[in-house]
Image (cartoon, rainbow, N blue to C red; front, side, top):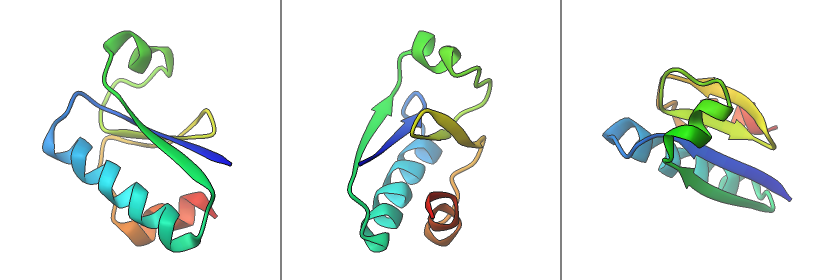
Length: 77
């Protein structure tokens, strides 16, 4: 089971990254959970200085942009 986390405080880019990551994982047929992380102390624990960010299984994979579904699929494969 893959664990996806979208780090961000709720801006439009954060919401777009959450939606796109969810679609990408679903289209790949992954078994996954996805969550939003908006608490600043939790975001800082990942040493992320820009949001949104995508964390996959504890590793930061994307910072500072809301990538499209196809780009996220490449990160998840």
